[in-house]
Amino acid sequence: MRFYALIALFANIAVTGCSSQDPQDRSADSKAPKFVKADLSEHPEITLKHDFGFVGPNETLKHSFEIPNAGRSRWTLKEIKTVCSCTVYTFSSNLLDPGKSITVPVTYTPGSKSTDETRSVTVYFNEASSPIVRLLVSSRVRTPLTLSQNVLRIETTKQQTQPMATIQVENFSKHNWENLEVTCRDPWIQSTCQLTYPLDGQAKDINSKGPLQQWQITFTPLVTQLDEGEHQAHVTILGGNESELLPIYLRIDPKISFTPRDIILAVHKTEEKASRRVTVVFADPAENPTALEVEFDFGDLKGLTARWKKSAGRISILDLEWIANEKDEAVSGTLTVRMKNGTKFIVPVRQEWLPL
Image (cartoon, rainbow, N blue to C red; front, side, top):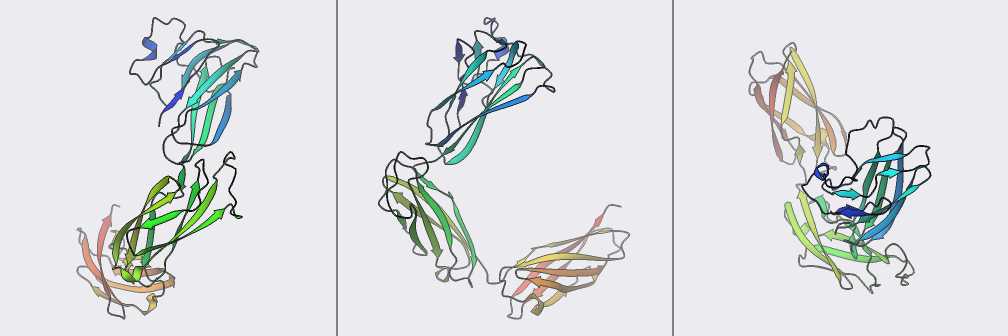
């Protein structure tokens, strides 16, 4: 992101690009403001804002701010800060008399991606009665074909046969599009496209603010044709002469999964009998955790018992109770959860001592 602020104080201004030269070393310019430390704790703050609205990427934007001196004393410029700390300024004068104003032209170049952003220029004066002036410029950068998401991620299970995900597409070009084309080489992705704005289907005035048109695209992965695990596809969206590539990542979890993958039981040495509560998540909300069979390989953990506390959809509570091991070193065991359908999950369990 490039951001340049051009500050004119009455007459002349010279702005260079980012430079390693320190402004304090420009001794030849006797009129440049001195960057001395001042106490800013009592300075009032003034914020001046300008919103450029919807703009195109890399578009050069300009706006002039007016900073008036409404006080009774002269203000002496201390320093001006922008996003780019390497910008070097030279001024013909650094004084602002009562009742006078200075014009601050700001030139701002947004980036190339669709985003909402705000940038600032801050002007400092030395006098305690002078304000700290913050100049804010904001914009909503939009590419000609703007997607509400640059990456689409879908998580599902084999049991959910028709998961869906949607994105919004906006036309910020200078031409109305007759239609929107969505293509994908991967046959397991299906899509439908619907114009959502304008609702009457009539072309919007290209000189008006905001998008000319909006679409909603719904993607449906055919999970029954795929194996469990990670899958990836790339969709091309074409409107007029503009196009965007949308990566789609699909994760198909097993019908039933179990988390956490390991359990750490931390206890104090003063505890003879310890108990802990573990939150368990199942990928299949239709599975009834109360019907699970729980088995244990105790290892060095003595008297370990467990029971399901409650179930609410995907979330269950597992209460563990065991006799704390008297050894100083950490001890471990295994929690085995066996489903009625034969699916088995093996979860390592480890006891660790906490410092007194």
